[in-house]
Image (cartoon, rainbow, N blue to C red; front, side):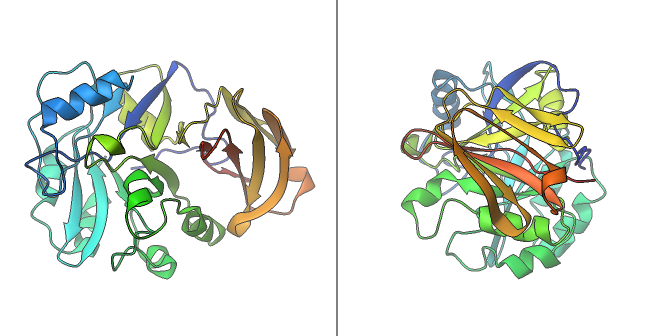
Length: 292
C-alpha cells in the first residue's frame, strides 16, 4: 500500500540514506541462484549494503544471522512468466502468494494488504515481460523495475524508463525501482535503492519505500532532492550531467554539472523527474514529482 506524497515524495524526510536491494536469489531455493543464503548475505554486507530482501522464486528462505535489515519477500511468477516482487513486513502475505497461480488474483489480494508489489524487469525479452499496454491495464501494483542488473547479460534491456514514463503520462502513479536481480556474485551491486529513513528496521525501511522516499542508482549518489513551491531540485556531487524528464519521457533540459532545478511554472506538464549521469554507465533516477 503506497503512502506517497506525489507532489514531493522527499518531503519531510529524516534519517540517513540506506542502501539496499529487493531482488536477490539464492541456491537452492531458486534454480537460477548459484550461492547459498549465508554467502549472499555476506557478499552484500561486504559491499556496504544496509538492507536486503531474499526474493527467491515462489519460496521463502529462513535467513541466517546478518547485520542487514531483511525485508520478507519472494519473486512471484505465473506458469507463463509475469514475474513480480512481493514484499511485506509480515511474511504471511508473501508466503500465501506462493500458492497463487494467476497474476490478476495476486494483484487483487495485494490490494487488501499492507505490502509492496513491484513488476519485475519489464524489458526482459521473455514473454510476457511486459508490454506497456499490459502494464497500463493491470491494477494494484506499486511500481516497476526501471533498472534490472542481470538483464545486462541476458536478452533485453536493463533500463525500463520508457515503460515507466508511458505509465506516468497515462495517469498511473507508480514508483520506479532498481535492483541487481542477483543470481551470482557477478550480479551484485549493479543497481540499488537509496532509501531515506530514520527507522532502520525492516518495517521502517518498507514504510519509507511505500512512501517513495528513495531514489535508484547504478553509481551516482544524490545528496539533496526535493521541492520548494513549484520548483524541484536535485544535487549529486559525482554527477557529470543531469536531465529533466517529463510526460512520456520528453527531455525538457539537459545540463552539465552537479545540480539542477526547474519550475512547473515553466512547463505545461503533469510531472517532472530527474535522470543523472556520472562516469561511464553510472546513473541515478529520482521518483517523479507531480504538479498536483
